[in-house]
Length: 257
Image (cartoon, rainbow, N blue to C red):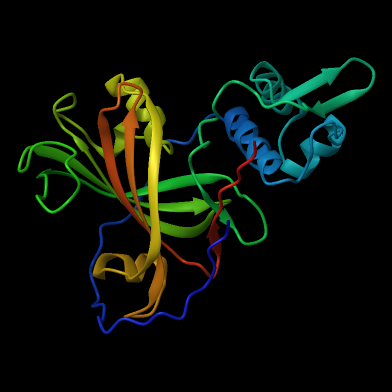
């Protein structure tokens, strides 16, 4: 399902806010970036089950990467059950779904004209008492990390995020510690695996700190997502808010049975 531009209006007016310079998050290795991009394109229907991909030379040229890097990406997707490589014939999309989750499996925003590769820049990392009006991630007023980030798809800015998670397992944190994927950061730094999420999608006025980075007019209505993330043991691990520009991206969810 796709959520496009909306005409809802809000009386609130944004004010100019001076932001710290955004710091690019640590990027994934190039072969992982390519694997994630191809996986997102397959899920978006660029290629269907049983369809053969372009030759390695053609695909490498299209993606502006070395053939050796592309081969590493394809090998990973084959290992994950997304692709099937047939000697002398080529690389095909498997008819059945792979069993391993991609890094950006749960990232639902896509460009209007295609999935795009997600990256991030970190605007702010701060240790704060958890607000009592938010979902019960931790007991009220317990210390949590609040991370504010700008999200990009194929280097185009599309969204701003505000992310909250408990500081109990991580008392010292800087922007240098985090990469493009927060879920990968949770696994590697905190030993926490996100197993499921719940998104509530609506439209809202962008808060003050979002207007300028997202390049939206004061008082503009934008797409809005509230997400709660749980571990496999059903413990709430993260609460986040995302404001996105529906002129350049969509929230996409694909389901089958």
